[in-house]
Image 1 (cartoon, rainbow, N blue to C red):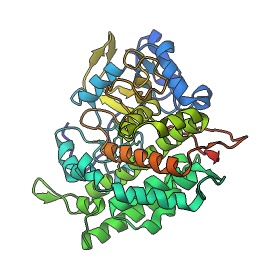
Image 2 (image 1 turned 120 degrees about the vertical axis):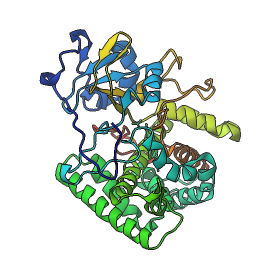
Image 3 (image 1 turned 135 degrees about the vertical axis):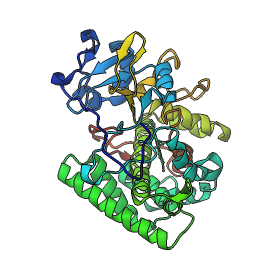
Image 4 (image 1 turned 30 degrees about the horizontal axis):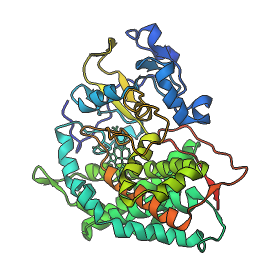
Length: 420
Ligand code: HEM
């Protein structure tokens, strides 16, 4: 059904969870309880867990969980198909984020199907294009250097930091504030809201964070309406689509989704990569020794090996794949990290190989909903690597550091104590 984002209504879609809520059309031999994103085996080593899914489960199976039951797709080829067929696999009602049904809004553009989806992307895509983000390179580099100045010390001098708080979180948040046209003095407040919203286990803390974010974003939108600038918030607030301005709910749903989509993902990716670097000093040296022009391939391979999130869809019609009959209204999750470990596409998939032949990686999804911030994220990771390795070329995990993962839809170690 064509969505009217100016007048949002909560989706009328079942959300099944647990053994008691398995639809009758699901064959018994395709039902598993993997513990993906929540179970102890997953949390002990999430990426190894997802690499092993190819050996342990059929390519498409039905996963039963405490929070949600859904079909899982782990093959690269199947994910490409799902993600490129929005007519069969819809985004309406597909995200996991709850909202007040009495004050409902859509997360834009992620919850909007084609053809409406494109008109939202057109508003800000030019800013996030490769050319658009290249204009930010100097600014991002400066932000990275400023952060390093605070803790890196002089060349050759020893030191230590908790990577997450010193670099992994503040870097993407400060870049995000620049792009959005929001003040840098909000950086630490935004970091703490993001941590509470996406990582607190207490629903009261999460609810408070969401309220703080929404209040702030509503005020920022009002301010940009009165005083336009070149930032993303202002562009969205002043956008004209189909000859009229966006409604308040559209503007809000767009800006708030950028916050959700653009912060935790970059941070988690950086944390995963830095954990691997800290454990593999010879590979750090390899990155330093390689010619500068290899950096894009290095970033791409690291994004493949350490991708952090998933793509959820809802069947808009009955559909059969690999002999598996799925029904309209079923949910399906493309397990993107597992797809990036598909051995048929990426031989020796858990090995980091900077010389792999280029293939489509799924860290950012493909198709109409492919990540709007993908080029920005690549640039942030590239600059983070270059600037960090210039200042701190040899580092390792702090002895005794415990690496812990928490349940959630964005995968990365919670904290990362480093020494050099
Ligand atoms: C390494 C960092 C990032 C990763 C791994 C990532 C991953 C993804 C993925 C997998 C999707 C598709 C979700 C789906 O198909 O259901 C997506 C969509 C999206 N991402 Fe990112 N993302 C990252 C950074 C960013 C940044 C920095 C921004 C913006 C500042 C951003 C904004 C968005 C938006 C707006 C969408 C929705 C696109 C649409 O529906 O058309 N992301 N991202």
